[in-house]
Length: 168
Image (cartoon, rainbow, N blue to C red; front, side, top):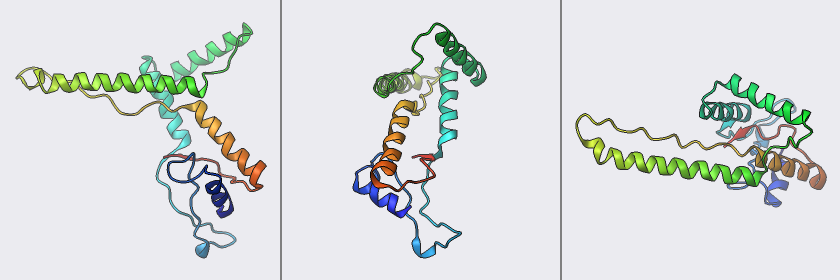
């Protein structure tokens, strides 16, 4: 793990504000059976992805199960028609995420203006602010995982068997 960490840091792929963070092992506390390493705070990747898909479903006015079934049906139909079943690219998703963020900021600005003008009057309810959570760029996440683990295996010859498990 220490070799992987040092190699990725030298390559500019790991560290604060980089593609990933590899926890620092505390070698003086490690044994053949016990690995002691730095704790990284964050959300488990499967849980973050589940919440992300639940957010898409909620925005579409559906339950997660309904949304999943609808998307799977769309995918089956596209495959039967022989059409492209690739999802959006990392760049396309980035544009979408920026648009969602801009709309959220505009909605929150509108709510703030309302709350500090009309919302101060008796009997006028205040408007709620929208959550600051933006969707995850799934395509970029996959691209980054391939780049990081490809570099580990093909360039350095050392790899981490526990790939990115948290979203920081």
